[in-house]
Length: 237
Ligand SMILES: Nc1ncnc2c1ncn2[C@@H]1O[C@H](COP(=O)(O)OP(=O)(O)OP(=O)(O)O)[C@@H](O)[C@H]1O
Image 1 (cartoon, protein in one colour):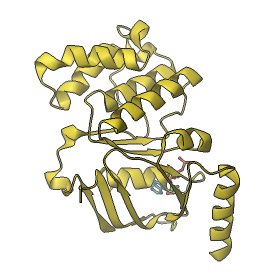
Image 2 (cartoon, protein in one colour; image 1 turned 90 degrees about the horizontal axis):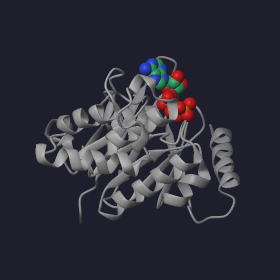
Image 3 (spheres, rainbow, N blue to C red; image 1 turned 180 degrees about the vertical axis):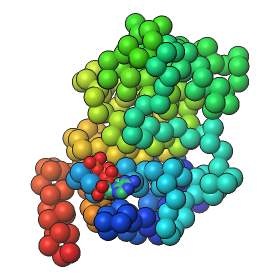
Image 4 (spheres, rainbow, N blue to C red; image 1 turned 90 degrees about the vertical axis):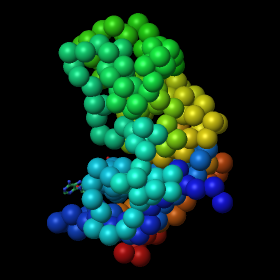
């Protein structure tokens, strides 16, 4: 069986107030878009940070392409969790070149790759503008470009459509589907059920730190199914 792009087993990380992640198993297969949905505070960002090794688990394991963190090839991972990391005084293009170097992209590949991603995310007219002068949405597009440009095998994005305009949402959707088509495994969190239903093969519902069920992306009235799952879980708790 092909190995997972990422696999988490028995992940636990609770905070002092008792919230956090309370035992999660999760896998993303190559070529799959796996969406995580949940209410504010359900634990989506915490889970993504655990999956990326940005936060240490109290218990559980994560493997990326079959390897533990120590052996992970981080040049094959792209992520945007929390806010886009970019130097304000550098231009969009300069930030992307730097990101490409950090991801180990070969020098002769960088210009072509950066130009392609700038066009892909609709940043051409801002390419030479200082990042500090970009609007919030264009800074988000830059963060996404940096996460995607090196065509990673694993992509992890936390609420990537935040601050994007409708054109940006479509560009992102197409960019993700293109990468999934060539085998990337994509883990993406969102509050927009309709949007994730367009791209995800699997939608996992997170509530109070646990995965409580899945939604069928082709199902009708996803909102109702989502709230029903959450309500039942809250009542059981
Ligand atoms: N570093 C931290 N220290 C203490 N508590 C934390 C920390 N990070 C997250 N939490 C708590 O863990 C819970 C889950 O937060 P998290 O940000 O993962 O939720 P989320 O599902 O991403 O929410 P949202 O949709 O609002 O972004 C919250 O109650 C939050 O206050």
